Image 1 (cartoon, rainbow, N blue to C red):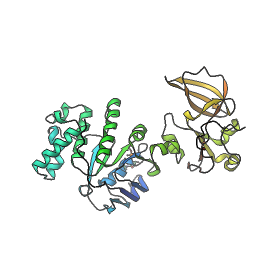
Image 2: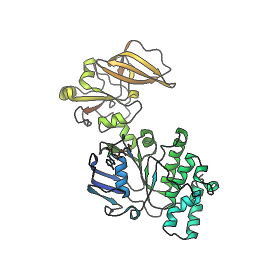
Image 3: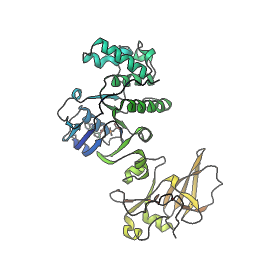
Amino acid sequence: MMTDDSSFSRPAPAIDCAGLTRRFDTATALDRVDVTLAGGQFSVLLGPSGCGKSTLLRLIAGLDWPTEGGIRIGGRDVSGLPPVDRELSMVFQSYALFPHLDVASNILFGLSVRRVGKAEQASRLDKVARMMGLETLLARKPNELSGGQQQRVALARAVISERPICLMDEPLSNLDAKLRAEMRVELREIQQRLGLTVVYVTHDQVEAMTMADRIVVMNAGRVEQVGTPREIYATPASAFVARFIGTPPMNLVPLADLSAAGALPGLEPGVLTRLGSDGLAGLRPEDMTRSATGLPVRFVSEEYLGADRLVTVRAGASTLILRLPAAAEPLPESFHLTWPAGALHLFDAVTGRQLAGLTPEPAAGEGSLVATS
Ligand code: ATP
């Protein structure tokens, strides 16, 4: 559906937020947020409801003002500027299309307001309509379009503005699962082709993992971690991030509890003594496998998922969920678990921060199991 005729000649700017704080009477929505959203990249603000994602997006847009801190776009301080002077476009969850205008007029609305010449409008409309696969729909009214088509019109309206930054607040949440998956691919394609700086708000980890160059995980008005989807998954900086990403999420149990149950593969001698009861152990369901030695567990139940099964086991006083191949034989009442070096994550039980340097990095090429006893 896409043609290859559009890109910006100048690099899209980065967005720098420094010490950004937004207090309301009843809540601190953002608490000293320092984050850089790189130019030309797809950045996703991810976190649970109420963590401050929309507030951060609205401050970047200029729709709201920080209590403290500042924002730079392309190095320029925009803190005092209204939205129209910030070189950005926006796409919201509600498509905000004018019901009485046809698709073409909806797409062109911003350009008409800005008094862009008719010839220029026509040529840009032609290009954007082709790019977004909307050529045959230009004369229709919004109520004659599917949800996905309406969202494409909303997106076309942002793209036609030719502004290098596009801010999106849960733009796909009104679409059904199949359309959402298709639109994810389309959005990503458009962002890459135009080299846009996109800031995309969602609470959906799958959206974040599939689309983002960088994910900014937020919690209670603060940034927990910034990283590529792979970094966020493989090395969560906190127990909060570990719990938020992955389905089912990482198992998080008291380290002391787990070690009381038996051997912990890959745990360096001395770590347990150093951490005492203050450590939290994290293990991803898919990282654990059955083995001859390792952590002894008791079978509790299993859930068949087709390609694999989710197995619930008890290890001492803790419960763990494992993801095992479904084709395997029935599990015995008790067995042992092991995992690759580096798969055991350790977090501070009080602050939730990752405890660095306590687990060995997996050696290159090492994938096998290290069972200690
Ligand atoms: P959601 O995914 O539910 O939209 P969010 O992460 O986008 O959540 P925000 O909308 O940024 O969260 O809200 C952050 C916090 O600030 C919440 O506690 C919210 O209740 C509060 N808040 C946001 N806007 C206002 C406002 N105008 N007045 C008072 N409190 C507000």
